Length: 123
Image (cartoon, rainbow, N blue to C red; front, side):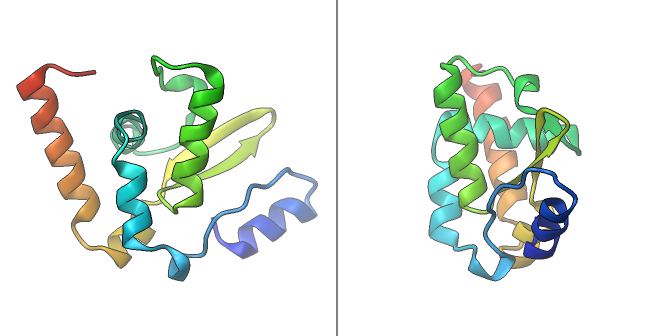
């Protein structure tokens, strides 16, 4: 979500959440966000969905407050975008931004996560 989108959402009365601009996303922060198994699970689910998912659509074996924390870290580090649709908080992978900034990174991470899942039977 760009600043323009956030401003448009605010102007229409929709609640908006802060997101970093594309040029402010840093590799170290993205890698930090992806390093946690729960956050990696969220990213894999969003990538598989190829669209937007509600927070409740992705089951995580942690408390609601911990889920909120993980989504916030992903958003603040530029990995996902979040916005409200009515009362539902929707999430989407910032695939285009990440692919432009770090070509092949997300594809490699998703491929590695899939190989690990098959090898260890995780999730």
